[in-house]
Length: 263
Image (cartoon, rainbow, N blue to C red; front, side, top):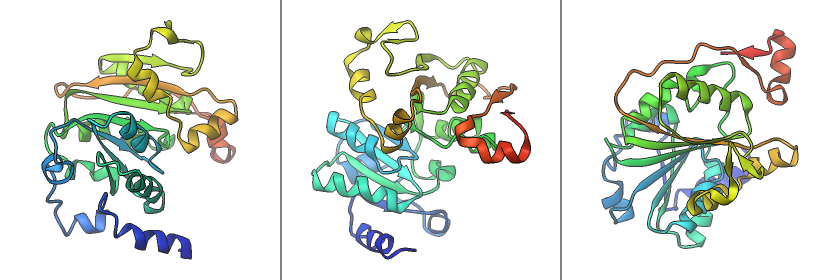
């Protein structure tokens, strides 16, 4: 590990807005704040929104600036990434921000039933080889049901046509209420909805750009976005359909395997 990363990890140990519970820790030490985030950390009764796979926390911090009456928690396993957003939140005195360093596979160990109102999936790895690892898969949606309120909102913002198509089919297959969907977020027209007709909150939120998003935009890729509700009832099933791979992400793998689609 580089000296710079070691320094960041050491400094982050002093941050009161960061909670570090990788799998090796949570398996030994239970997370006492599960079900008590509002009273023990935020000290309010405001809604809680998670950003899963938050990276440097651009969305977590950006949303917290826009909505001081909502609590935001960024989740990622990479401490060096979280450091950036956590330090920024401290420097700006944002009391409605927290970061959790852990594996998203065990995210339901940190939040109690109905404790969370919304989830953001921002530029997640599409995991084209492994459906189970996709953050919008039935495996993860069932995890989210353990703590997301009934019919809570899941947002997906991505450059990946593969992940967006997969999630679209999953939403359709399970008849999940689709609230909004566009294949080109920054075009003049979004799936039949004129940009001028979007509500103010949606415009403000979608105006936040992450580090990776700017990279994809510079490469000329469309940014895709959808939001849907996740009811508690009903068995979730995976869509059974072949989806074209993202060639800009999968070049090495497709060269090796010869495959250009996946489920």
